[in-house]
Image (tube, rainbow, N blue to C red; front, side, top):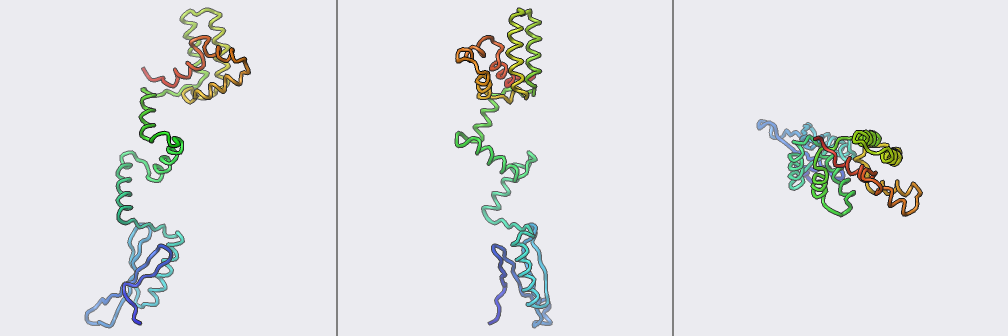
Length: 222
């Protein structure tokens, strides 16, 4: 049985096609055999004078690409359209497509079905009206104490603030805007105070750990 052309050599999802061609009208019985395939995102062609050599090379190429050595990827129809649109959307941002996909998946995992990524971004923007200036907890406590002293607060008031806020700063050696309400609650519980004292600890003065955290999280350049 005569072989039909183009002949297809397949290995998994990889297909290498062999075309038979007659390069010269003066010699109609002379044929060449050309392999066509995609490798490294490019269409490649290789010609042979004999069919057997072309078939052997086609099998070798198909096996190599199927094992991942060629990093071949062929997109067709809707897949190609999706790829182009994604690249166009990310191009102005300078973000690679694979990193965008990874971060998007991580964000959805964090949201856990409680909203969309766009909703989360809008909420974050509304909650942080200005640019957050990173500031260590201890530095903010020191600035606050200086401000209270400059305002001629009582010695008892300053002593109370220093005791409470320095203890808070030692428990949170990080940037203040990263502290979350649940962490503040855990800190209060770790003090092993009575329930009444726990309630009074953050309410005793207006310059308490909770308000300190809220101030830092909404801090923006004036």
